[in-house]
Image (cartoon, rainbow, N blue to C red; front, side):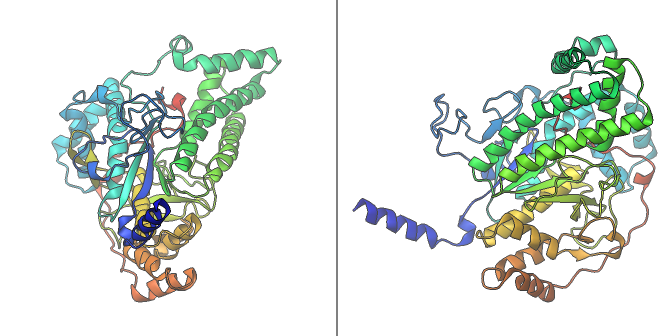
Length: 475
């Protein structure tokens, strides 16, 4: 009788429409306000866990992980409540005015205010912290916007802090963040290393320590069966180069030659990407969507992590300079690109989404472009859950609106088209994938490009950088 009942349940569940299946999308970011009114109905809930009983009910190694996990503090608090009410209108205004700048609607007084505030180091530190505070919730809002069944799993890997970083060598060496580096430095000296060899050794140990933590994150994504993971975080070439320079100046007390700085920075990325290939590749059932970076640089020449991972289950996204979903043919000025290492372009300027305390805010960055693609991936899987990550990637890349102006900048030469991708997903249930994509392209023609005049944003730039995957970058 029990077997009969189980079979009936399975049959009934299998007969439900595809939209009844929740598509779980991990948002690996700075935390998520799970009770936010704009997204609370779309937050993933681990029903294998009993709330607040301090027992690992599902035996996955994480106690009371109801909505995900905080890998910074190793607990189930996926949102930093300490900062609720801390930030004021000036912090929000500073970011909000970036949207007005991009849209050429700022007044002379507003421009003057922005320039004045930009000189205030304490205020800018707080703005960066505010950016971390809102980042994950903003990204999550884009992931679930106008989606059929996307659910958000919150994985916090970025700490929010308003503490200003050390300004002197002594302050840094006495800071808790430098402990592991001090140990690595001493171990390197004991091995007789010096100069470039010593810096390489310190970088090797640093990368291995940090990537061991990332391995835990990706393992969690895998065991919770998230089919898509949004990764709007990373380390751009300029940040890595500054870190290497810092190691030279603080520990070796010297300035490296240009060739040594370049070599050490390249070594850092070799290590990070080699480990990343192994770690992200293990979660083969998940499509990872990466933000390309906000350095205005070519990722083919100046690598970034993790976006430069080239796996079948990864896709890298640049930002489109337009509020229009389809049509614009111009890359955002801040966006990274790369014919070999960036796949597609998606909206990334003045994107309105949810932020903590039940507000909406327009924010720009490849961090906003990536969840647009995660949203599409979720919709594609909602229509055909049998598709593999590789097939979802094929659909997204194969259904772009090709633009002449994007040739040589991204692999697909195009802007993602959500409607066409969803159409291809529907066809893929009855036709081979290549045929389904061709049918979708035939049935839904490309939108014409929209050419826009140069904006004031060319004169004043402030885009929140990608939240860093490495803790030292936040010092």
